[in-house]
Amino acid sequence: MDFRGNNKYFRFYNPIAMIIGVVFIAIGVALTIMMDFDPYFGIGPAIVGIVLIVFDLGRRTKDSDINSQVDREIKDQTFHAQETLGIDDKKIRLHETFEYREYSFDDPETLLVKRGGDGKYRTSVFCASEVFLTTVKMFIHSKTFSLIEDKKSESTIEIPYEQLDEVSIENLQFTKSVNNGKETYNVEYSHMHIKRTDGSEVVINVSHDAAVDNSVMQINHYIANRREELEKKQSGT
Image: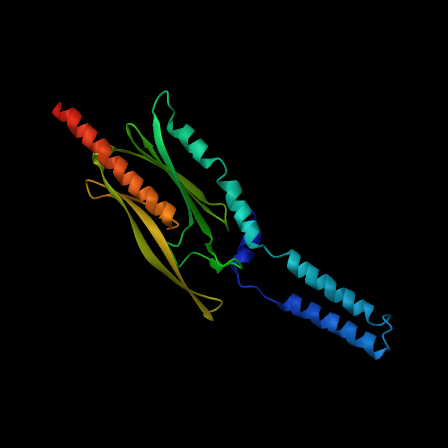
């Protein structure tokens, strides 16, 4: 993870080097024109300007760089989580797996945020979670990591179906002033709430779309079916 470069990515861009580079190129062009298009005097400033611009472009962390780092961090995460939890068809039969990947928008005070050139809002913390539906219980694995410092955490939770109530989505609003107060970001983000019968819940960061809605429907359906099966088994019917 390129923490130094990522910190620069989330800080607002200072165009001084680019401006100076353009000025030097303009001077070079002007000198060339003044000398009846003799490039002898103008070539030097122009080269300096080009070098400054190339240097400025090269030192920036791009949206694609952030994406690549996130992808490397969560590569094979679902497989490793399944291994860690001991889920396999020999011991615990897996029915369905759902993956959720999203940047955290939970703490506007500490998070750094940027709207990328692709229109996507990214923050300095990323969350990746998996929900495993097995024949015996629900397993939840989550990993949270920072893009600007060496800080990460993982957690695993097991919940028997008789202790599960329902799963729902909550849409929230993230607001933060950036660029020394010159801009304000208003970002919609979402939480998945996995509720227990005792009132407690597990919260997962999700990117709310049709696939997430469909997963919620499938999970609730499976929970209902498993609870019904367990109730029938307990009642002897």
